[in-house]
Image (cartoon, rainbow, N blue to C red):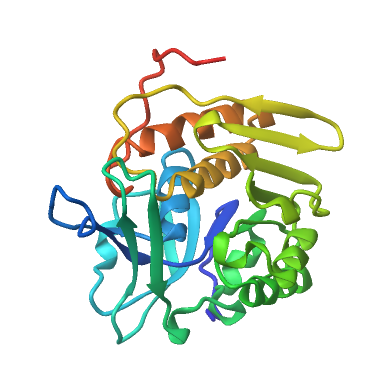
Length: 283
């Protein structure tokens, strides 16, 4: 962990923590053979890149000796929370089982050394307003939550995946955060104690729920879907970035849904552009 903070340094309001990886889209199960697509991804990247299109973001993660950190230089990201290890970068494989990618499985092995924990957070990031914990084991997420609560006044959000959603420790994570991002299928998490819940409904959009308000943010209908990998992470990052910089919950979530929809028109996230604001919204 860093021990020095530069004079005049301004900490990003949002810090995103999690996996930086290579995402490999594997088409080998399809009848119409095509070459695999390899892009830089991971939940941390899919949340941070879109968020940085609006405001500066801090990034905490690990890369291997085969990933060039300069891939992130063109974005408004504080990269001082990225560590490079002398091992290969984590790889996740999305195996398409149908021609349109609707039926697919995600597999991958995260080397223990690549897991991100409390010791990986630079001290200067503890002045952030909010930490977002992207998908990781519930044990690592709880470690981070406990550390942040003890050492920072920041609020915290978390997301998870199918492999962890039914675990008791995952429920504990979602009971402990301020904002919970929950896929609609994760029924055991829908009644968690998080004050704010963003329930993600795929192509239908999202539902925002808190004690004071509930509203929906609908997705636009598009026909040129290329790949949905990371769309939910993209939504998380944009929503938090806008909310922390003064946007209303409604505007933040509706914009986040729009950007997530834009992200599924391409492979990967590095080439993401802001959508044309003239496009019609489905309401």
